[in-house]
Image (cartoon, rainbow, N blue to C red):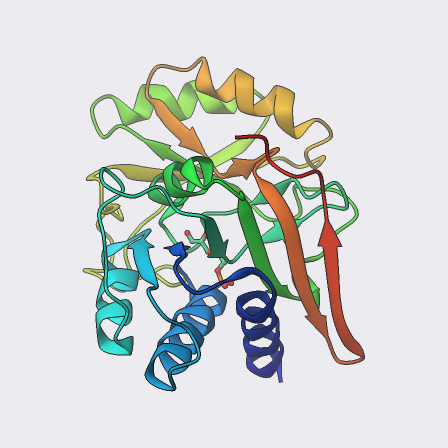
Length: 240
Ligand SMILES: O=C[C@H](O)[C@H](O)[C@H](O)COP(=O)(O)O
């Protein structure tokens, strides 16, 4: 059932936001993978032409190749739009991402996208305010213990993500390593996240904290599927 909702949201986003000729940022995770497959199907059916994809992870690059989507490098082509999943979506379209382990590359691709980020999710991801799930923060392995201590001083309980946890499937017990060679700290804020933009700024003052899973002002739209229908929430258009 949840999988059907994820697919419905992803397919609706492709229908609404992807046009022939677009370079598309291809997100990571179970929901975004439905969008990748749908784009591949539409290319094969001749309903989308001239699409190229910018993958946000090695996993997504492999899936896109399998789906028949030509890939390009971010250095050569700026995406028109990025379609990606989310772990939490607030009413103002600020978002938590990264429980799937790809937040830094996802954020780089979303930020570079001309028409911004479109997040796709089932209704369980839509929340009144952020912080019900741990906030992933990508950290530099060197001195990560000090970085986790600095994160804890911001009022959270940080946990180093290990392989074999959640969707991570490597050697159990070892730190999970991102495509960029970094670690991830999952930071639970017991009282939630009242001011995502301010928290993002605070976290990024910590030298070893490379990027946070808070995506503030990056999502142009959210497509959320529930059993009773699909809601499209649109924010302000992203300026060039
Ligand atoms: O790093 C992973 C991503 O931010 C995912 O898009 C996010 O965790 C949502 O994943 P899923 O669609 O599998 O719930």
